Structure formats: structure tokens, C-alpha cells
Image 1 (spheres, rainbow, N blue to C red):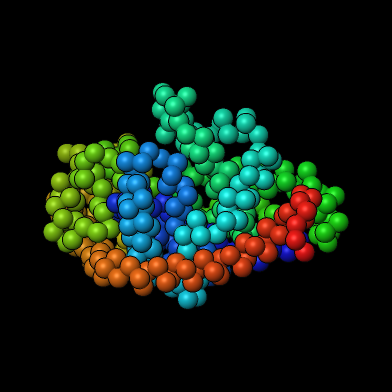
Image 2 (cartoon, helix red, strand yellow; image 1 turned 45 degrees about the vertical axis):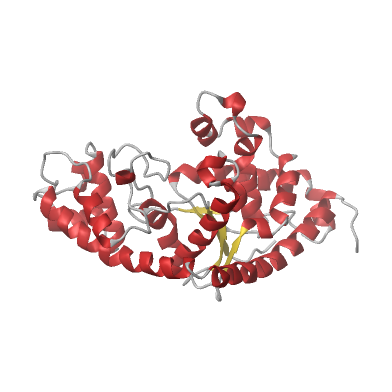
Length: 350
């Protein structure tokens, strides 16, 4: 089966979007608009897999959904040329998840490292939704027959699971798939990961060995997309470093996580390689490098924060974009779900 090249990706609306979300995901979403057919989703169903205090309850979920949408738009995603919507408006996500639950295997899910990390020691008290999160993610992608998915390293295992589920569905129902006009028996594509840029994994400003996270207790560990220029400057100047000058070669960053993180952030924001950054700043002290990083961050992020603030103040406009995007997403999803149901053997209204 010939698949239309299509990108799908999503961001959870759990509040406090930060630089890691921007460099690891959103900035690449913007670039991909020029080369791919894109669907960008605010995955509000995924937000429910976490404790209610994380996603803020009903009022918090609605507010955060609009904020993520505002971030997409403020960063430069065009909702007219591409699809921007929130997941819960398209019922196919839940429908396909159930079918995939019956295709996936418990052993596959038991190997998912993110569940182990998020559930911690009290796994028996974790929600079924958190355990099943990767299957919903597979349904998100395959509902639209997406061929490419921009993912960070921490989500790559989940994409591999999506490929396994797609392949097993194709194998299990191969005869039915061929009977419904797909000669090669490949109904679902095997989506490819797209991991791009020098800062796909942005680390904490307080600990270069830990990922930048919205759940970190210290607000100084991250740069929020809503931070103003003064706050950005203060956080970067207080960012943890080591006493040595910046190295002149990239290999000199290997045992210096905080230096590696800050150089990676500079490289990603400036569209350069880490080595190019070190060519300019290597051998110098962190103070002058941090001043340059402050200027760069403020130049890149302050306009986004300002536009996000304007958009969030007009929820009706944001909601209209989400509704329009959901209507367009639903057209693709419903057509694929009807074919899926036929392949599985569900009796349905003609």
C-alpha cells in the first residue's frame, strides 16, 4: 500500500511548557511544515494518565490545552496549512486504542522504561492509563497512517512499539487486508522516527544529568515559554556550571554535563553545531558565554511569550482553531477507522 508521507506528533497539556519542549519538539514542528504534511495534536487524553494535581483538574486541563495551542501558533505553526487540534475531539483515538490493546502483548508493555520511571516503586498503585499510554500513542500515530514522527530519545521506545503493533496487525489480519483491496497486506505503515537538531534532549539548568522537566520543584531548573526577558536572564546566569573554561573541542563536553547542556541550547537556538559554538566561545569563561546565551534566548523566546500571552487572552479564537483542526483530522481518522473496522470484521452501518 502506498502511503502519503505524513507527520504526526503531540504535546501533553500539563502546564509549564519550557525550553525543552520548544527545542525538543515545537521548533522542529515549525521546520517540518515546509517539507511535510503535518498533524499536530494537543494530547489531552494522555494528560489524564498522570495524577490530577499534575494536569490541574478540569479547569487546568482546559487552560493548559489552550496554552499549548497558543505555543504552537506563537512559534510559527500555520493551522490553515496544517492540522492543529486536541486529541479528545476525535473519538477514533480511543476506538483504535482498544483494537490495538487486543493486538499488543503484555510483555511488550512490561519492557517500557518510561512506565517504570513514572510509576516508581509503587507500580501496583499506578493507573491502567499510565501503563497503557504507549498503546494510545500508537493509535494516535497510526489513526492517520502517519509515516514519520518527530520524537526525542525518551520516546523512541514507544515509537518502536507502534511499529511492532502496526506490523502485528498487518500480519494478524493480512488475509482480510488483502480481501479489502490492499494487495501487499500492509494496511498500517511502520512509522519512522525523526530525531533532529543538536539539543533534542534539553537538560535541567540545575543538574545537567536530569532532563528539563515541568515537574521539577525548582523553577530555576527550566526556562518556561511564558518567562519574560528578565526571568530568562536571571535563570541562565544562575544556571549550574563547573569552574573550568569552555573546551575548544566538542569531545571536551563529554564529562561536563552542565557545559554540554548550555552549549547544546546555544547551538539549537542559533541553528549551529556545538563545535561551531565552541569555536567562538571555547577557552573562555562561562560568564561571557552566559551573557551571549541570555541575549540569544531573549531574542528567540521573548516574542513567543508575548504572542502566547495575547492568544491565551482570546480563548474563543484558540478554540475555533482547535475545532477547525479537529474537523479536518476527523475526516482522515473516520475514513481509516471504517476500513480498520471492516478489516477486523465489525458489523457496521453501511
